[in-house]
Length: 115
Length: 113
Picture 1 (cartoon, rainbow over the protein chains, first blue to last red):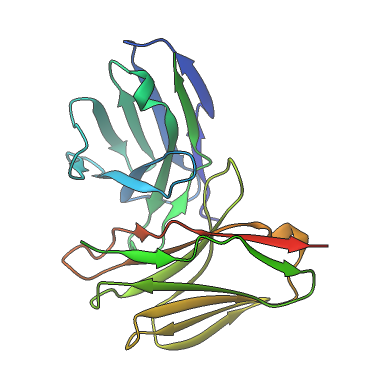
Picture 2: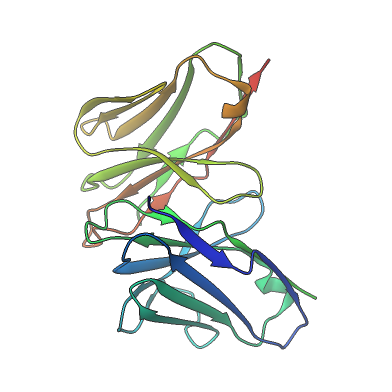
């Protein structure tokens, strides 16, 4: 149980374009999903928290107009990186939590490279 | 600002030995504590969570929590080469954010055959 998928697993895009990443909870309903970013040799940094049917809550320093999050259903959240730049190249990981919220289960991650 | 501190390592142990991983946290109000394992290039995998003071055992893994000392540890018995990974300590709760995880930078563990 508690399986979370992400798509795509890796993507290369050109600077200035937008990229959408999907996060799905496969065997449970995720009331809350989280989006993290991890740069090489660093730990995970929370970018935003999304709840189904409401606006995402962004962490300080994360541009909400650049990183668009939509949590359309209890099993799907999407992160769109708009007007991507090389400095946005990173490992993006989502996690999902059920009603208890205490345990987060992570997706396999999406490696984004912006050229 | 919440902080979670871990020794970055690398921690090197021989196969079959006990690996001991430590973590301290700054927010005394933290309520939930997690250990994740992350292989290179992969996302974190939840190993254990602990909420109460004391020990919690699951197979070869034992988590230990001491809230008074703001310290949490993970023991891995009979270490195997497949345990070689980065171990992330994470805490949540306290400060009004009951569910947000704050991660340490991780400890790199190498188990030598």
